[in-house]
Image (cartoon, rainbow, N blue to C red; front, side, top):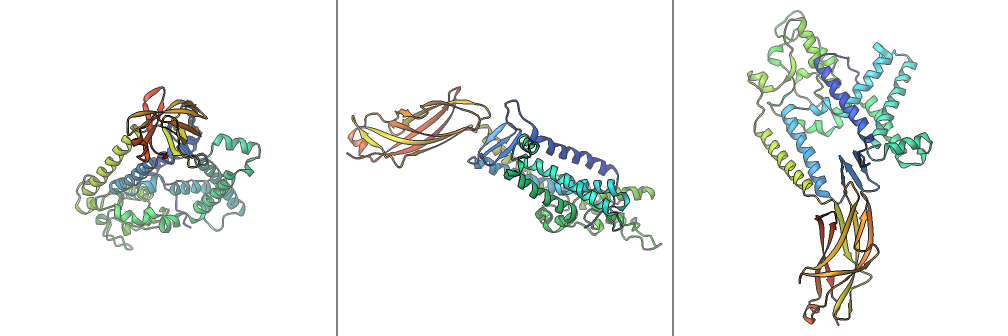
Length: 439
């Protein structure tokens, strides 16, 4: 376990602002309720409903999930190729909470933090505060899946112990305490998959935390000074993963910029510019400006744009209703007088709009363009459903009179249309093949 030295500076100040914003957003978002009483973000797995920024989605909308995952992946590729591992150093929970744990440790133990001679009481005070922070973070993580208001009420009534989410919260609390408190940088160096393939996403033009070896090398050796690097090793002392940035791009570098602030302060005493900063390798080697537009970034940008356009089209043309229609296998179609067919259909309909809506059902014979009557049904052919509400029921369809030739065709292709009565253009159509009984 590495306890790095604290370091102030411009990069540190900017990171504090960004990380404070992200932590605040993480803690506040699950509590936000929109005017229509739906949560801003809620992944309600038991009910299979996902609330995202005023929209309601269901697992059957796999294409939207596919677009979302592609967007996340391509965004990671694009931004890493342009500005390096900015996610690791500025947005990753592992980095943010490790930094927060260190702040707590230094607040309690001061200079004794991370040292063996720290008092037992001080150490356990730090551990207790780490557990509290881990519990708060875990509570809010679970709050993205379960209502935080319901959980808080259960905790206040001491009834949360019988709920499944309580044990998930305990698990994540323990996992976070062990990971952030003790595993720390080892996760970044040996377990994080993003760290392993970062070199495939970056090239010599990527803007990243880099050591200016042309100015710094060869380093000072004793009193012999050739390059600008004075071998103070402050860049190593402040590094949260314990690497030496002077050895070049490494898996362990999370681009947090602490070494930038450290080198800047040391070089200022020498009246020289920092040797470590946000540069590209090509910028150091040739002195040229950073080449932002290049084949790699253009390809990623094009792919990301295509996916975003596809996602936008999918969302804009999305019909906020779901319907599954199937012939009732236990009750096959029957022939009734006047050569009419009576069929029994099972329906499952869900309103996936954020507001209550009224729906109307209609059915058609798609082969002959005739309307099929809906004779009866538990809900009738017009009904209301609240936001996210789902109902399963059966209806009885009755065709118009069919000719002998039509009856001998064996089946009748039809469709069931679900329409929003307030907006008739908003409709969903499902095809249905009705088996025709023979005389």
